[in-house]
Length: 308
Image (cartoon, rainbow, N blue to C red):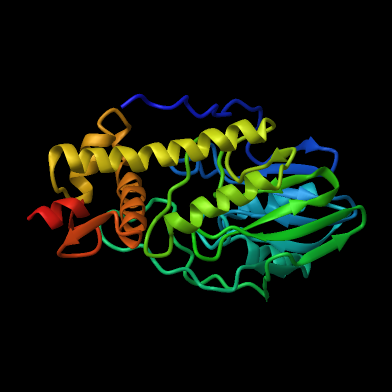
């Protein structure tokens, strides 16, 4: 099978932990010191506006990160804290930051369902997180010189929201789109069908720039998203071809075949994404499963069931 043209990843950018860098006329960024195989260099908290400002994804509950955000906004007032989703590298700093500033925390209102089993992700679920205000899709928020729209983008998690900065036609996509890597979709909370629809929705809105929570901005948005979507469709085809060619398999067996040349530290995340693809294919009637509808199940194309 001929692979598609690769994703034009954006990985190079200048930063220092704790330093505040301006990345656009209305946006500043502070990178938390939580690097890892799922967080790249760390979580970038984005500060929007001047005077009265909003913070998008403040990051982990690390006093150094909270202090860095407070230092970057000294003499200003943080009025809004927007959280894209309740993972431990995004949401925990929101509560102590709100307590220090009086800001209101906004996020999707549905608590995430925890990832289970031995393939739990390094950047895990923040099961205690609750926003002050649960969002509705399309809800608008304003400050002096800035306007933020809440854009529902479920899939990476069920409660995932992105945030559009109207004045710059830019989007903070959280982990729905990352410039340095593909995003993990981890059932039961993650849903590949919803995730693909969210990618298509973002692409259809024609943003001029994306500011992911990990890594640098994405400026060539349409070509990047097109490659991102093609990559996912290609992975789906690879899974089906592997099942048709080599026979029924568990998720771990598929990952060992399809990700043989990848860093083995990423194999647990790959298990989750492959399972998410299989569950989407199962709902569409393309594959069937014997046993557990999950990591331990034995998956096969539906034509093999009919032929048995």
